Length: 167
Image 1 (tube, helix red, strand yellow):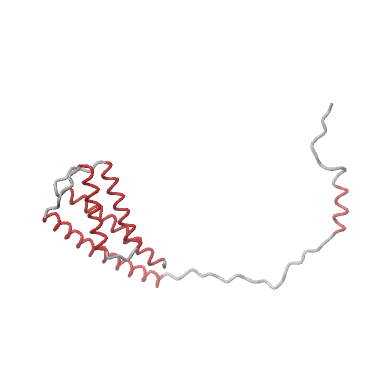
Image 2 (cartoon, one colour):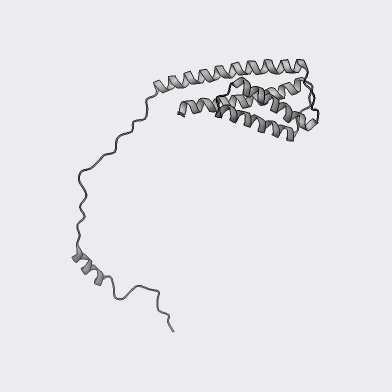
């Protein structure tokens, strides 16, 4: 996957996850639900991250992933207050409208990001990678065995070791 496609996929995942969580909280508040506590907020956050990862990793339609995110978000918020209920037609209509509008906005943002990245790709020159310089001359190391014979006796007598213990 190219860098441009990976960027757009990550952007789609972030938008879908964030929108899914935000719409779940807004729908919960509009329905007269209480402020979510820590446990339901963490569950909602994990559901939003999971939905965002699915949206970034696959090419499923955005509207389908958002709808699944709404279901997960509703379950996450309903678990704390233990009010699992059948949704009313007004609630379903509000969720469908919110998912539809969010899907249109996210698809438009994804398309805009593709256009912007393509424009930047044309404007910014690629980094110049110079080919490695190959040298035909190999360095010559002179071997001087006579120098070693002269230096070794001058280095000192005996082998090197710990100091002798004075008794």
